[in-house]
Length: 120
Image (cartoon, rainbow, N blue to C red):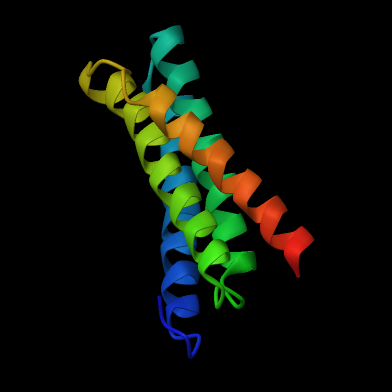
């Protein structure tokens, strides 16, 4: 964690990339996938990636406290595991066994953000 706020730009850049990838995933799901289950998984993955990418961009300017940094890290890792697992299933036939861990990390990240907001 950078105390001088330099990591804020990193969080924002990662969030913006997640949001951009989610748009591509959603378009691919809508136009290139015939399998309904795969399309649904990819749409869900893109929805979560977009939302959490946008949150990382919005919260990036203030990750100076350790709790906030841990919350953002949990949101990012959770999104990568959850959305990545669903996208891997839809595109490559991978199992979705990492999705529950990703979901738990996203929930933990949100709860850490709530605690951080209360402690301010």
